[in-house]
Length: 224
Image 1 (cartoon, one colour):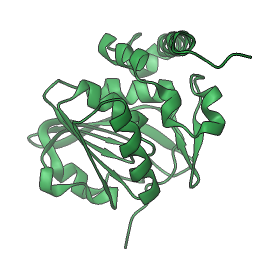
Image 2 (spheres, one colour):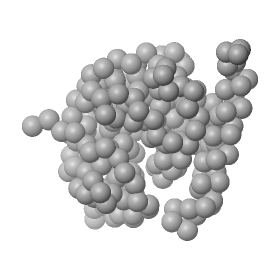
Image 3 (spheres, one colour):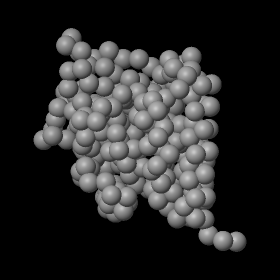
Image 4 (tube, helix red, strand yellow):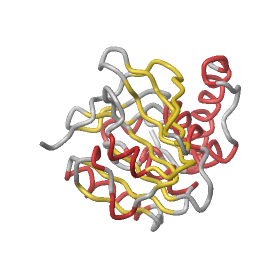
């Protein structure tokens, strides 16, 4: 069998985005809309997800499912990446904090839509691997560091948008503090067996919240 060429991978990406769009339509009552921002879908057409998973599962990269990436972590399913990104309502000049870099796929999506992304990852090996992958596709508006994501990245706060790719009982207070007034934060909230993807919007009187759909993410790791 011939190796996959870029034209084959482009077909797989297009099919992946079509499946994501169908999924969005089926969940329109829960998510409040029947389609995602066209800019989000266009970027997902372009970013090579197969480069952001281990080689042994690259053949499944364009299926709408999470995949293992090591250290008991997964890359989120494409639908979840699209949903969380869409909920942020990113602008081209936005400063974004991401908690949980993984191998960098969600980071790449954010970086294509925002002005600058700061991403914190607790697994050192992931940071090294993500840096390599992000450079490979030419993204230079991303800063990565190893650390406890629950503490945010105060040196670069406030942020317009924050995405947390791990669950917790509540949003860590430093993240709310580092979110700009008028900003949005998206993360899974609740017990590990009862998480809900939740959108927070920070007003002058504090954050409001809207629960979107049930989800299951790994727990947010912290450093004592």
